[in-house]
Length: 103
Image 1 (tube, rainbow, N blue to C red):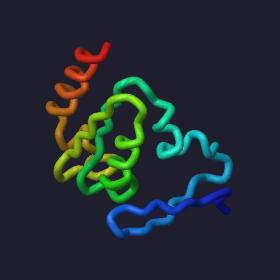
Image 2 (spheres, rainbow, N blue to C red):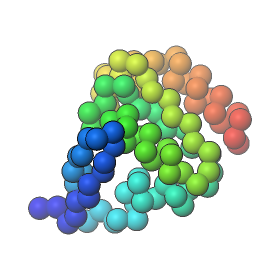
Image 3 (cartoon, one colour):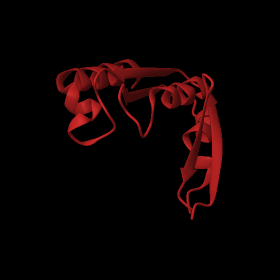
Image 4 (cartoon, one colour):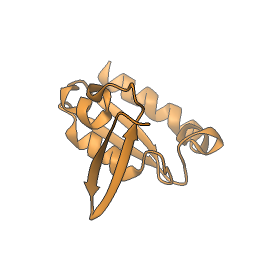
């Protein structure tokens, strides 16, 4: 059984998201984002059903610092459909460029 659940509303879509029983509320991305003031690059697959684009956009919008959301067309959440697999060379170019800009 899950310790908690919360409702996220986005574009008239209401989804219930469950966290594991022992997962601290403060570490949920939507709760942690306002405390993150460093630049963040978020990468999400356009077809990701576990962490949908709208959810990643919401977290990115809540960041205290600058946030960049890269939506990888045709990518899912993990495995062979993960963004880093679907857009292999672009993935490492984007990550490297982000580090060059912010480190």
